[in-house]
Length: 484
Image 1 (tube, helix red, strand yellow):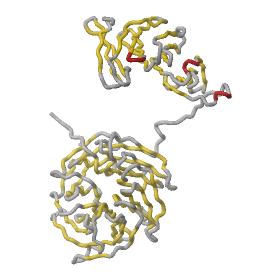
Image 2 (cartoon, rainbow, N blue to C red):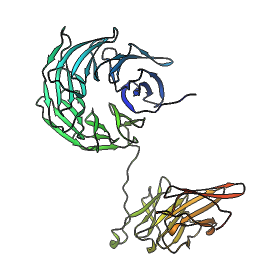
Image 3 (spheres, rainbow, N blue to C red):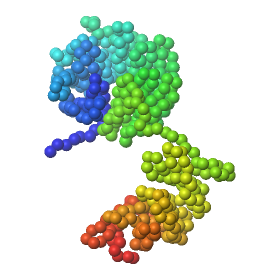
Image 4 (cartoon, helix red, strand yellow):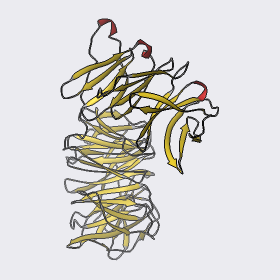
């Protein structure tokens, strides 16, 4: 028996045509083209993977960082698929490791939460403390970057500052380095620092829900961007844009003016934990255990087309659609606040007025089934229209008061209309040719909002049963062969 553990996706990395994801202590690799899972392996004993650091010298070698532990692995492609090989033992540390930078084929610099840098040789599995910032403090984030053949690290401190300092790693003794640049302005701890590829700018995101763009040379804040409703976890440069993710489970795409171009609510629940970008491609990993991919180079899947109600009377300019029902990819039904029933045909931009009834002003409820439309109003009146004009419209009076809901139901070759009225009164009509005939009548138990929201008809042992769900969350079963 095979089982799958679903957990937050806390690390993502794009490599060739593959997506590397860290889910718990597992490395799971997906195809970027087919989106299928093609490989999985448990890298660590119990730690959760937070970052993948790719070797600049040997591109198929990686380090997986998991807080206070790390491991090195390689990926090889062959005719049978992928092979992932562990190149080191799992290494444990006394402090949290935020980022890694490969300086040789077998040595990696690691920056700890204590603002110190160690050198790890994964082949011998040994470490050496090589450099520390003179400003000793707890870090909430850190990122390495190579600027003019020198290695720098940008760090986010618990004191709401971003620091940049130079790392010296080729010395025999431990070395303390003064801060190169300090960036102040955030009103919360810094969760991520990112360098621009031109090395002239950097990004920072914070507990204060802001994204800040900085000029490294003069330390000026070039732009402050607000758009997330909770803490911002990460932001990355993407061509001329910036992509950000946050605790609100939203991914935002910003243009170079600092305005939001796209807002993606594709993850369920709280937090998008991981982000990876590549020319025109955005990949996010969420707390819901899913990975989402957005290709910015393709045409959008959804195209907007703004349509306006026909202005037949200047005094009715305040009319607006109250109900919109999609008939097919070219047509929709619209019932307006003024009681007008329209059929709109998209290719021709043609408005067809089906009916006008003042009794449907201000309130109405609508149900659609194939080419049949049922509409109820405040006065207990039900109208049924046949949009293919096969039968004339039907009108009946079901109650003395408001119609709360309408539901079309089908079983075998029969069609029914369930009508919900005041005080839980509910009527089931059968549709016969061009008329509605009373089939069953009942009253649902008392609740504050007393009407049926969903229903199903089924046949069993020559009996016809009606299953109803109401606003209170209760489910009721009725045998419609026995009338009340």
